[in-house]
Image 1 (tube, rainbow, N blue to C red):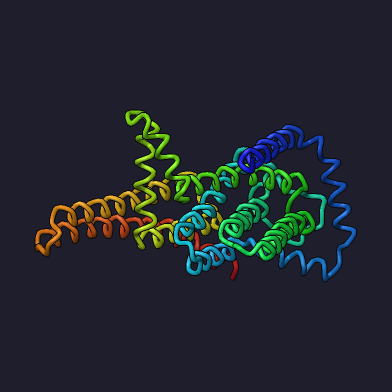
Image 2: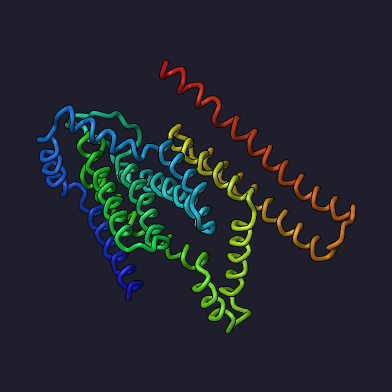
Length: 336
């Protein structure tokens, strides 16, 4: 019943998002009405309050929160999803902005200056995706019902305040933030469902029993591939390091405004580094099975595989520096 309700919410959110996208110009009267309502409470206190709210989803803030979450979360299987969630959310927002290319509000009081397109709101999507995933974690991991209710309520209120701050500060239209919340709900339902499918042991066993009925099916083949990725991500500490670096690259890439070509290069490098790490894990496992005793040849095999990962990682780091250093220097010169 809960699963059915969850997908009904996702379907309704997607339908509303499509409706909003199809009627952006017609809904301008709603945008104006909401802005007038929020602008009527303008004051130094309100401006400071909403500025604090909007800064809670600054890319650097979310990166720090994500790394803290990864460091202190007790359930290790949720560490990679916590980082992956931020990566996918940022990527999804960048893609949607390029798709709709809506200009920022003009005839409003702009307390913040933002670059890029307006629809959907990146801050609102980041808030809904990141703090919404925290709600998911609280539901999964918190056993105290009262504490769970309080945490989920506060996180939900925080998402709404961040969304309101974007309209108050003049960075977005109401439809930007509303559309951002709707599409983020759809994303969260899909993402958390995948997390439950591949990281919850009970559901994994059920999925394997279902897939075992047809061992030659393509779905069965994909299940083994995903299981291998899952094993690599949950058993190798280096994987957490790689994904943390990937998250930082994507966050700073969004801040510095990478070109499409630069994004493609970055994602190819991400894939190469992760692939090399997975192959290294595979080789180490095979060597341990074939040669459980101490053998110099086993050491050579493991060291060589680890060296291959190091070469790919160094190459990726050099290319990353070539892409990012000039942009960072330009940003510093601009600020000075």
